[in-house]
Length: 414
Image 1 (cartoon, helix red, strand yellow):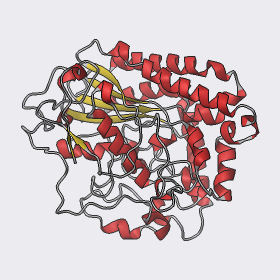
Image 2: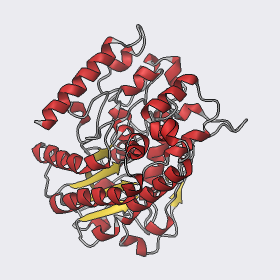
Image 3: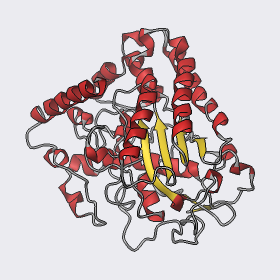
């Protein structure tokens, strides 16, 4: 019943956005259903100039994918389906899914004004976006498609969480850490209901990124000192549930971004500043006065609480949780010529990420997966595809805490 009520509210919001959108603007986005599912990029011309400059640079057809992907190559699909999560190659992933908030939901990716930030373009989201391919839109799913073209679960086009095109992206824009168990249960139900999945045998990759709404719009209205422990406990409950109910699974556990970095943005527009005070009042509204450093410290403790949560889940052969910390020390990219904020990475609200920003995040997430646990990068790779790690003959597997103990010092990079 709660889910039905939630759907009705979301539909009302969606219809309100459609009814009040600026005339002549965003029509292509609103009608978009699985943008550019083929390999061509012909419909890129349909985007407005306000959108095009916030896209990654398209990779020409004559440029090969950075890694060898064919069966028998280091990252290619194994000859026989592996039984251990610690011997899992990228090509062995059969199903992708995601749990999270507005970042994972794809809010604002194609926005050219504040109103459009509420559109959820899941098909371009960093973890499970499946529109087109890596040449046009670098996402983790589009990377994995190169290793296994039959992978399923990725989202397409614009879709809210209850719509069919969202697939196994169950993120909710306003979700908080206390919602993570609900999303885990919803994801499990969707997977079990999908006849295209062999639930017991298929290998699954689930990405979790949650916490920004706790920082922005909740912790200053309550006992914020309790938030790190609550974050740890909620994550533990969700991971325990997945551990007990979802076999053959790797969980990418991504600590949230420190939202305080938004303060470093240079020359934000008045619209952006008003938006920040509205959606992130704990950091940019009156509640933040006299508590800025204290709130920043709480965010860091919450990030640490996420990191602590993975060690207990590396004892099984068919389940692993791997912390991918590329957002922990992330900063907003700046322009080379004047060191000012590069707005091409940001949505219209100067808060969420544009398509280019999601591509950079997907690149960084992939690199984390290719790095051993003790050598992971804690920052965002701002230049898409400049540093792109590949599986090697010495270590062809997705890194887990257990297999990271092997020699993985050499890593092929472009």
